[in-house]
Length: 273
Ligand SMILES: [Zn+2]
Ligand SMILES: [Zn+2]
Image 1 (spheres, protein in one colour):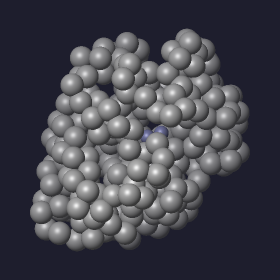
Image 2 (spheres, helix red, strand yellow):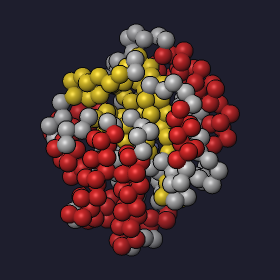
Image 3 (cartoon, protein in one colour):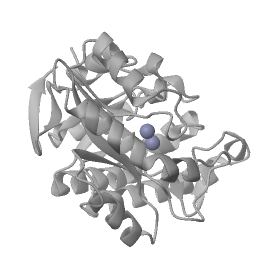
Image 4 (spheres, helix red, strand yellow):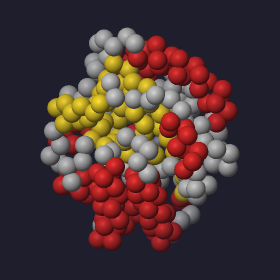
């Protein structure tokens, strides 16, 4: 059984529930660890259609205070304080400062932007892309992903192949090429070199791609490199805490994974799932 969900959001970004309600959902599902990983404020110029930067900046002290209070409860579920950080090209100083601003238990590194385009914002632009255009975006995504991993700023690479979200068939055509696998392998090696974990996420099951992140060929390479893993729902509401975890456990086990990594008291611990 998976005992830790290490990626959840609250109403302080674009989620729907309070930290308290998310914690109660984690307790109800028998989790022993839950990591709050709210989106970090982004610099100007990196915007989604329904941008929540202001809300996040205004409520960051509330987020920190409420999660710190939950963190003190310990038993039977340990809450952890984290953030989901964006890897934004040419913004490393901004990101570095945000990572150092608090005493976080864990930090997720996520690529949601290619240049200034939030590629997971909506399906519309993807509908018009040819296979060739899609492949250029996949290439750019995994190049950025490797730089994110090499930065050494984060503990976990979140939703590793998020770029497939709106074009899963095209993605698998690209993924079948040896040059694509070689590029992704470089990213996975960067994770290993930086001591990072790879996240296995059920969020993709709720998105148009209808797949776990990451896809099987990436799981095979990660297993051969013996990368440590975490499990995540990326829940934005109580109903999705620990979403699809039985399925994630059998998926990971099928590739030979037997342990998940937890973050506790500034240490990484592996436990069976
Ligand atoms: Zn994300
Ligand atoms: Zn997230």
